[in-house]
Image (cartoon, rainbow, N blue to C red; front, side, top):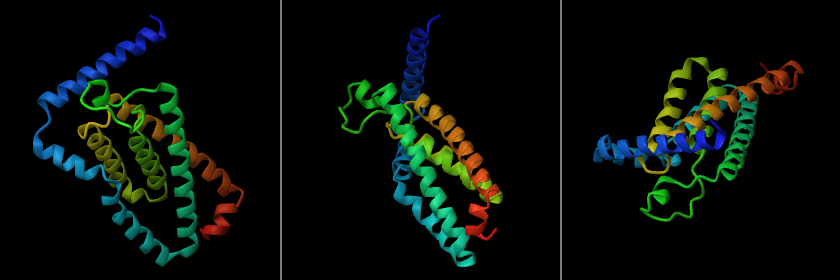
Length: 188
């Protein structure tokens, strides 16, 4: 089987799963919750509060965490953007003729990729919060699909890519720590 045929079959399967969820597993109350969750401004206060508390306890470490988090999110967003341009897959509503969106491509989900990369890095830094961080990423991914922004494959590939980006970032974070750069700044 050649790659093009395999991709076509996976795309058809992805659409079938999405249509099934849309038709049979989509109660109105869940859609309302998902539309609420997809707004990043609703989750931001929790992380801002956490960061402020952390900043109060250790300013240098908080500053390094902020810089690393912004760098990580920049890398993960750039990765998503490059992959979206390569695959050029339109969003579900566009493909199904519901509406034509100016919102760009859907594969992979940048929200799933970014939140998973964020969860991996922050779980490394704060292991006691890892369950919350991974649940947050999974919830955002599912909410993006249920709000009609992504097919299931967009979300799954976004999570997998975000997981790899997060671990790659940790590798370089540790490497920088071995060179004493982060340890000096963070006072760890």
